[in-house]
Figure 1 (cartoon, helix red, strand yellow):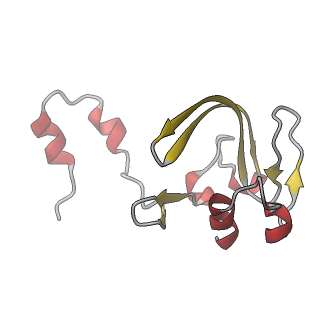
Figure 2 (figure 1 turned 180 degrees about the horizontal axis):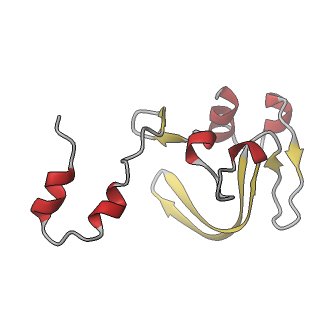
Length: 126
């Protein structure tokens, strides 16, 4: 976890993040940027747009390739979110959170609904 946080906090322009974290830089065949060999899921992106947003910069990328370790691939051949155990970062509190439990098919059950009251009836009671 501390390596992930470090990669997000430190600029690669002035610091060799790989040397500092002792992680392995792997060369991409598609984009001009290394990826972390030890990470179980890698999305290689091509930079499409850069927008200045006051104190921050927004980078928009196009995914060119995805690499996933066998250990996170589920039955159907796709990445299994339970095996991956992704994190979500919240900038306002600067915390990381794990993804919680499944909504138990809520999306599939909602496809036939036509009224807001039908959706409210599906929500779990507090």
